[in-house]
Length: 142
Image 1 (cartoon, rainbow, N blue to C red):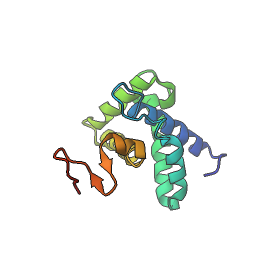
Image 2: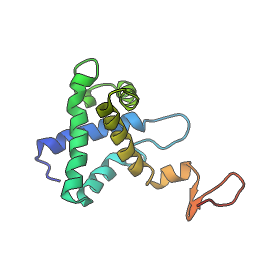
Image 3: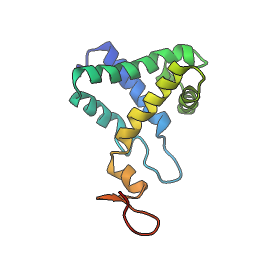
């Protein structure tokens, strides 16, 4: 990605803000967005994608960054809101009766969850082992 593109800079700001809101620091031991290097790994992933798919993801995060001026009380860009307000906003979008908002919230959650769950720390937290997941009866699942 070129560092000079305004759209890409906005997308990276939206990405960082969304990662912090969806995978925050916590007290129950799950790795957060920093530990899983979610932002850096996502930007690296974008660089591996074909141009069309890369543009879609960049537009998603840039749209979230800018549209929150109208979608979240306070009239600020997504990254300028406190993390708890961003988390509440994404949850509200995901359960909205307006289909476009549901798509926006679900696209954010899905795209970041895929990359979050691909990190070894996240996999270890949910009990994943090489070759499958550990089951409660001690065997391995598919």
